[in-house]
Length: 209
Image: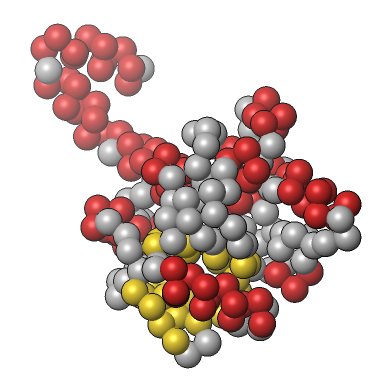
């Protein structure tokens, strides 16, 4: 599963200031009716973007300077609120696709939903978050490099340590973050195990047919 590995992720950044940005803001509730996620990226931060446009301001997701950004830079408690998986799905499908998120802290369910899509959410301290956001605001072409092997994020010649739990880090490095792919890859072993269990063997044989 080499193509699933997430060891080094790099790209230009999108600086998004503000604490407690919840999933209602990442994707409005009216889009939760969708049972597929295609096209959802166009609606990322839709209401926030509209409010800022009405005030003659520009949201980072509307700013052409950050249109190609793939590393999202945030502050505290990003992705809080409801547990909707549509939020990380919208980020994955926005523009060129958000491939990693670096911030001060994340809501646990949001972070877990991101892991299921192959998007690492790593933490940095407040000073590093401010430095990264300010650097990308000043130079939108600046490349942000996240290295999960060394647990560092590098931008503008300065690096900072990142936090990520050992289990999740191993999943990304080994390419085991996709639980569905893991199950499909182990299909033969699963059915073989089912056949070896007396009370389950009838079901296992039926499932194979």
